[in-house]
Length: 223
Length: 109
Image (tube, rainbow over all chains, first blue to last red; front, side, top):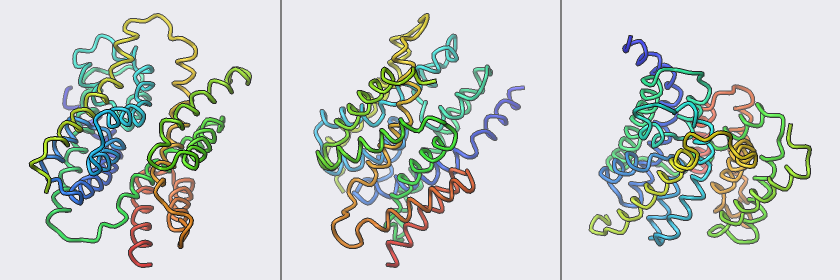
């Protein structure tokens, strides 16, 4: 019985395994490039466990960004997870291992779990922990390869861009209302031009929030 | 190596704690809540899409479009990912092929 659930969860996570290994390796290589070894790769993949944020963290660490700006950047990059939690409130009620499930709710884990109707707690748990393991293995492998085997990794950071482009395209194809995506894109570009690459995330995020609220009031309640 | 410096550790702890704060706060705020405020569920619906689009721009923020090759390599690689994804609808395939394509593009030309 339990074996069946583990197997089911494993099959479900195979696409994420592949994605996490690629993205994790990319992260590990970049981390090695700025001079941090396997201990840091393990520490970050275990305790942070947020793909995009770990990529951003590399530049924060490399530039010795202040703890305040590290905190604000994290808030901005991971702020979207707030809304994932909102839709899982009911599903995660009365679950013993809830703290770990919430801790491990990345974009990919969320995307697997939010589609499920009501499943057993074990199922949620195994999906979450399988994904976490893939991520740790990916980050560590990339970090070791990046340190030991000299290969030209120039451009591997594009895997990150590719991930978001694929997500945006996927969302575009599956939703009818394209205004939020267009808004996010245009706000980001305008703020990038106005504030420059180092400081545009906060104003862009604020602009997006305000504009989304404005179009909701202006429009016909969106649906 | 910068191993003898503890500041990165503090940075990592900060990131970890803030990430947890973000992930846990809905559960702390709305624990056993009746109905969510309209504005929250509305933002929960539309914000992720807008943010993903913003993150694409964020990834490309350091591309200089004023000097040769004017960000063309990035543009082409993004188009490859997008077209491949429209055609195959396989996220992993789009990421892997797009990344290899981009790596070849900047290493060979």
